Image 1 (cartoon, protein in one colour):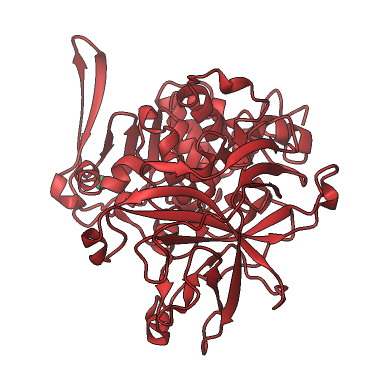
Image 2: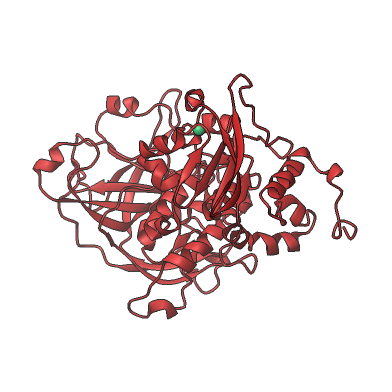
Length: 482
Ligand SMILES: [Zn+2]
């Protein structure tokens, strides 16, 4: 270790590191950061310290060199160019900028080159651009002012104002892909609070070697979002004593950020046929992770990709009273320990539920009735789907499940239901599905009103079987969410 702090012989380094050194030198850059060399590999302390600064390293770098097509650190930055393609190289001197070197290849040779911009399929992306599927690399790319992607056939350059590649087609492909343009290439000004949902949706699809790194590998981006873009307090409520960052969610508009769900969008089930025609290839829900990754109300607590519903003009349906986040290190955006909770005041609705068993498929849990919300006697309604966060094996038939509305949105159309437009303005509610939890680990809070999130559901005033007006027999109550 001591010897290596003065010099490391290049010859003992993996070839990909030597290539990165050579590229840096050719760019006239004398300092290079390589995570696995610059962080002591066997020191938890050094790792915690450095991982919390990762965002700063990448934000303040001159350029980030990405081995985008390399499966691991034993890969290469070498590019497999077609040797038959004539390459024109020339050097010269510009009156303003000095000497330059120019390399030109005919543009039509790039027709069969693929770019990661338009690849939506996770497996394809992982196979062709492995770096793009790795969780740690998301913030590295988004925070770096410039990135050079070394892909299989060409180099792609990205900065906050442009993306360019050797074959010349990447810019064109971004233009035709709105999602990629804003989500994959967000300029600093685009990463604002509204986009946190997109960030999480994208991030949750990415792979991590250690699930416990889920918050840490995003912590640089979270810090950047807080420092640069969020929370211009209008009413001086910055001093509520409630942390702004709550285990992967933001306190402001918390209801919106808590409305994540695993898997497909939800719908009302009317007939058996409808139920079995619903997407057959649903993701398999994984079981609850053995390690505590975060509180049940955060997407951090599950291992599957999450999505968010559209939530324009959302009205929050609860009040946040207090929140506690047990940090595992001094990184406010880093890993959390058991004991995180929210205290909320909201309308907790009781519900009856049933398990729908289907031949050869995953079992569905459906809400047969959300008391006071959905009419009991409607024969044409079998229930409302709910999206479970994890597969549950310990749910007993007598167990009471509850529903907590998070946000209500005004909606003109929902999905493909054209009838909605005829019925005039309508509302939709995004809700958590809760079960009672043991609050013994939360001293002073275990008064019986402790719940754990197990899933997510939605209902709207325009769905058959749902009352147009909310039943007002419910009283607000204070609950603790673990
Ligand atoms: Zn290209």
